[in-house]
Image (cartoon, rainbow, N blue to C red; front, side, top):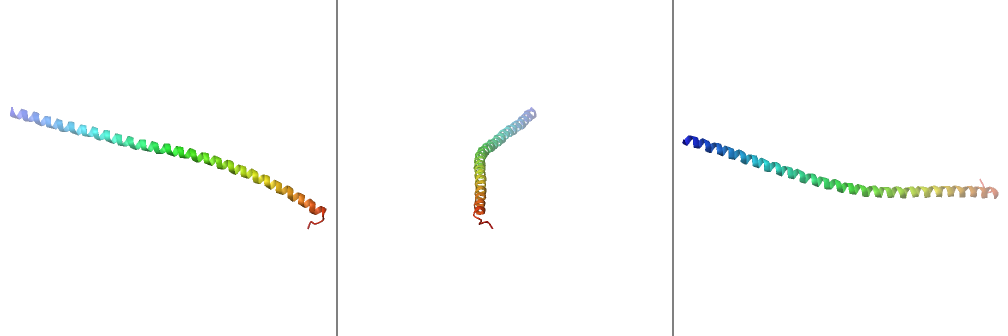
Amino acid sequence: MARAGTADFRSFNVLAVVLTIWQCADVMTEEMTNLVLEHLRHIRSRVDALGDDMRHVILRLGAQDGYLAGRQISEEGQSSEIDRIKERLQRIERRLELAD
């Protein structure tokens, strides 16, 4: 009977060790899951921040495009005004016979 009790005790120890390992593995798995989730949350917050930054950059780029378009229109208007002045000056020179 001593042997049967010893065998039962050994079986119990093995079972206890297996359960302990299983619980540790479960805890480690949960810790790893929490760690991964924490990293994913951090990544998500950084991506959200980048999205906000990109919206800001896009707004500024749109404003710059509008500014440049206005400048181009202004320059074209000035160019056409300069052309009209040149034509008038040429007519004046022809009338005064000052043309080369």
